Image (cartoon, rainbow, N blue to C red):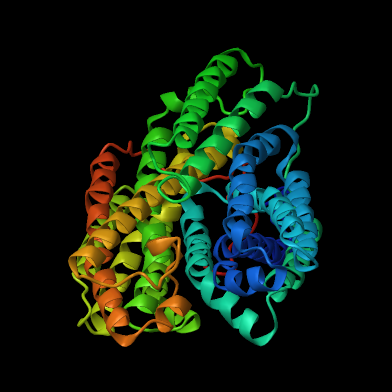
Length: 527
């Protein structure tokens, strides 16, 4: 080699210090993204076990559901908006904005002096929270090639599942040992760490060119439709009968707004949700499969703690601990399948396999009864967790690999948006079916429910149950055991529908380079 060629080679070869610096920067960036995912998922469920204490302290039992609904509604509306904003203005400033808003909402919620303040501040939390999860997934897609992305998506999926399932447990512990306000204050150290790492370590390209024209009308219509749908899922079968004028009116409003939204999006220069995405098979199918997986996950997480408290007599903290087998199964397959995808480049098999395994877990859970041991329930939860972990984040990876980079953010957010909306409606229907079955079981068992309260079955809580005479407690436990487990069986055809849909996923090679043209920001320190 001549001196000239040797010099050129030296100039092209990466500097060892630069490589080490990039690895360190990547590690910090990924840590920030994981913390953001942790916060977003945790705050969907962490308030659940603190609510009885909160409403007692703030004297707002009649507003209890709004503490959850306000966060869910604001977060759901924000999903597609954040995705599009990241595509147009750059993901880092939008992500930083979301973290700051989330932290402001958290500290204000912790300082709330009445239910009105708490509900308003939970909405602010939700506005920020909607951007945390989407920002983390979209930024990861910017800095890591699809071929390498599987393992990182696996870690994110594990954090999401762990946070969603562990939220009630953490919330119960903090409420018992530090006070309910720490359910919100706990976000501050984690959020500030995420904010600092993102500001310092994250470097992604910002879009350049003319200032984009924002789709204000489309955004307003989507927000209106989302609001109506969330209220239908929150109130249907509970506060209002499904056939009531209120639910009918909200459903009609959602349909009208959705219809107008489609008309507006066809003409918008920069649509908040490009209709061209619906011509992409690997957007439509993974999104639909994701809805079935989310229904299976959240139906299990939502109703199993109730079963353990009402049938097995567990307190809130113990009921949360009893979900650990599901967490273990979900963590295991989220991480393992992600790494397998990165090493082999094959991904289609995992949503298919996940649907089969999740269906098996739901069947096992449907066989529980008042005499079943915890280990039987643990097996069903573990199997269901294995199936869910095979699919959740891998479906996002399939979508991201198939869409153009200019719509990557909105494709990611839209997948999550439809999954959230679909799961909310599905869980609401399951809840309505459960209440109906429970009412029938109480009548069939000749259980005296006169002491439950004016609201009847809807007001039945573990505290109320413990105050009833022993015969009534036994009858109610038997009724729960009869009414609740078959709800999981109703989820089996939904999950198997996801299996059929997953068969039509189009296999496209995972790209070897990230959107900025590099293999990834740095060789993974976690590989």
